[in-house]
Picture 1 (cartoon, rainbow, N blue to C red):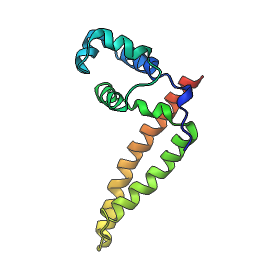
Picture 2: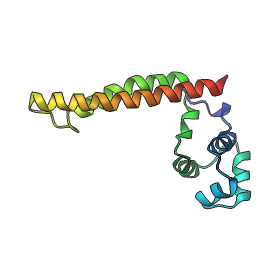
Picture 3: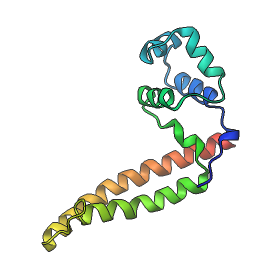
Picture 4: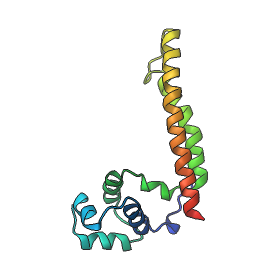
Length: 133
């Protein structure tokens, strides 16, 4: 995995995510249980506590941790996600599926869910590519 922390200024990324959603700083401060002044301090920080970033991700409904992962690793994640997901579904959480129709139904459901996951990952990769330009 290629972690790229030196090129990430998470405060700027958070600021842009808040701005993109049209959230007022005061409202965002209320959402993360801090003062308006503290939010502006967060915007200035290159690094923040992971628990705080988790809370911010939750409130913004966006995984900002992805900014710390290289494009290649995101692509690898996309490819590996399908294999892991399908194995999990076909073995039904560790127990082998006994009946062929159970395997077929499980794989059919898994395929639909995987297509949605893959589409989300592709959109995130495209979004991150746009940020690097």
